[in-house]
Length: 92
Image: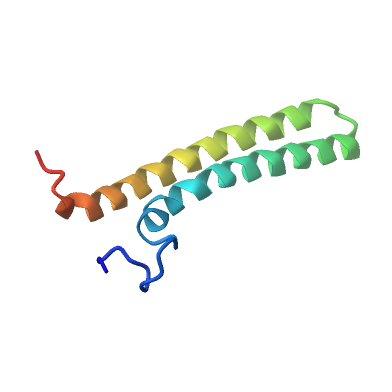
C-alpha cells in the first residue's frame, strides 16, 4: 500500500482527484457567472424596455468578470499545485 492510497481503497479519487479537483470547478464558476449576468440583463431589459442593450451589457460584464476570476483562480491554484509538487523530483 503506497502513500497515494486513499485509505486502502483502490479506485477512489486519491492522488489525481486532490490535484485536479480545483481546476475542474473554475470552469463551472465561469459558466455560472456568465449565465447569471446574462439573465440579470435580460430581466432588466424586460423591466425597463431597453432590449437588448442591458442583456448585452450583462453578458459583457459576466464574460469579463468571469474570465478575470477564472484566470486569478487558475494562477493561484497552479502555484499551490506547483508548491506541493516540488518534492516530486521535478527540479531540473
